[in-house]
Each structure stands twice: as structure tokens, then as C-alpha cells.
Image (tube, rainbow, N blue to C red):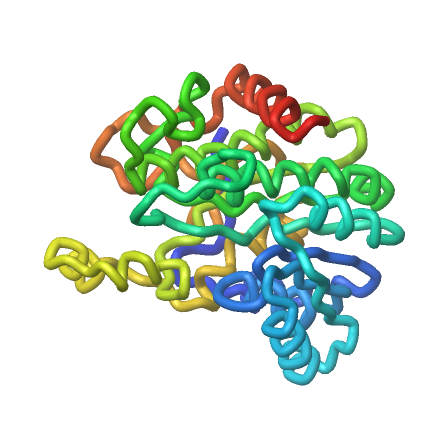
Length: 310
């Protein structure tokens, strides 16, 4: 049965957490220096959580942390360095963490790079950042999540997952032509499958994991499209039903901290409700079966572990 809440497209993060006390809870939000990551962090801090912004740009992260602390009156908001494509950086972040972790919001990401970019290991950059980096981080923080008892993992995906399943025989576009939206879509499918498999593997630790589509929000994530604007893209941007940042963070915050979803795990949400499964190729809403496929989730976990040397 599909899980629903009283919330909708218009709901804001503060409305989701109205009356929720997160005092004593500790959260990590990747990509928390701007956009919906910053708003997710602010909402959690406003409810009393201790929040760490895991960010690539540490100075920007510190400025955002200070701003959130000033706006919420919660001094327990800090920034820490994290480069998701650098395994040493991920390891350093995890090794520096002490004590339990109640909430992990895997929010950071890059979108539809117009040209193929690769890491030093030869991995396609969107897959390496959006999926492999978060997979590496989540595994590294497993002990802290288990220690929390009832921890939640939130995996920020996108309806772009519908453009591509995981192409296991060519993850990094080594044999097929690079296409920006296919690469992005594959990485976003990876985000969902990470939640599906973590939910299965770590249920015994009291950990729940869910994925979500935040909605379309005008943030720095669209910088590559805006830099290469075409009439077709402009028309999409002009007619799209955009969310505010406050609305865009609502589903992340719901899965991170709302008592309504306690015990819910391994699912994909949009507009603060579990999405319907659909195979309609024209549907912009809903979740495609390939993103929830348990066989692919298990296989991707094994492949990702091998790539990262776990």
C-alpha cells in the first residue's frame, strides 16, 4: 500500500517539522552550503538538531553554518570538509565523526554536465559524485548510524532517474556516446537503489533509508543548463511548475525527521508522499520499476563496493 501524509507540493520544511523536537539528534547534510541542502539543514537546526554541513567549499559552508546558527538560535551548526569524489576526503570525514549519527541526508549533487568529465580513476563524474561518493560516505558512517538506534538515511534523487537504469556493462560511458541526461539519470537511479539496498541490509541495525524527488527548484544545480540555454530549454524553464527552496526541502525533512514516517523504509517519495510506480514513458511523476529493483540494488551495492575497494 502506498504511504501518504497530509502534506503536498506546497508544503514547506518548517510545516513538516511543526511541533517536532530534535533536541539531542545529530544530522549530516551533504551539499549543505546552498540550495535545498542549506534549507534542509536550517529546518533541522530550527527543530533543535545538531547539524553538520558536509561541504566541498569549506569557507562557503562556514558562512552558511553561521547564518543558520544566527537565524535559528542554535549554535550547534558547523561545517566540515567533504569532497565526495576523493576517497581520502570521505575517509577523513568519517574518521573525524565521534558518537552516534541519527540523520544522514545525502543531498549534494551535480547535474547534466554538458561534456563528459572523469575522475582520476576514470569514473564518469556524475556517477562518481552523486552515487559512488554518497555510497562511500554512507558505508563509512554505518557504525555511527547503527549506534544511534533508529537512524535515518535520506537519499536525494530526481525524477530524472526515469531516463536511465544502471547500465552495468558501461557505467562510465566508455563504449557508448556520452549523453548528459542519461548520465545524470543513471546516477539518480543509483541514489534510489542505495536506499533500497541499505534498507534491506541494515534493518537489523534499526536504520531506515528512503529516496526522494525534491521537485524542481531554481538553484545553482541548473547552472550548466543556464550557461547553454536553448529556446527549447528556455520554454521548459518558463512553463515548469517550480517550487520554492522551502517547498523543495520539505520531502527531505519529512524523511529525515518526521514521526509520520517512522519505520518506513526502502521507498521513493515526491511531494511529501510515496510515489506511485509507473511504466508510462511520458509520466514525469512517479517512480520507475528499475529504480526499486531489488536485484539491481544488490548488484549495484556489490559493484560499487568493488570499485571503491571495500
